[in-house]
Length: 197
View (spheres, rainbow, N blue to C red):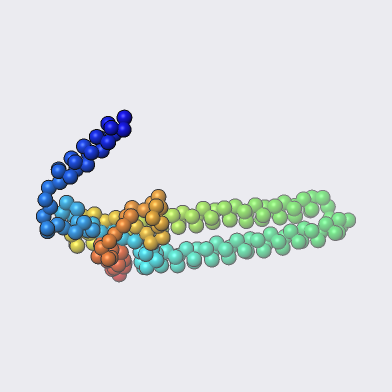
């Protein structure tokens, strides 16, 4: 068995040694070209940190967040006030009828329910605004990357993030030894920002 295994290894090694042809001294650098295509990449997280669209979305989100919070605070204050009034009315049971107490309790419960519903609806709207905004930005990144790639002659543009670890499941580029020559992130940001003017 050992002899067969040794012969198989010897056969594979000798085939690989003898089958190699003499390579030309002038070979294209493997870092950015493959079969005639230039390969570029973008740092999506860098673009999200620096593009004007993202800053505008952040501003819009903060404004909506403040609006929702102000309205919720008003409802919460109204609830607390009505609840305290109800609690204080329980101290004077002899002057109030059961119907009056039930009406006050019902009002307190309605306000609490309204504030909880408002909070759920606001969270839903906030998440939709954020999700739609991020998707629109990603579409703009893709569109700008296509334009830059065509203008600069790149056949492929890959996405990578500075925060990705070497074996991150979302990592597309494992290594780029081009000293940043294939990094199109700033060009994509410039194209996106110019579109907004």
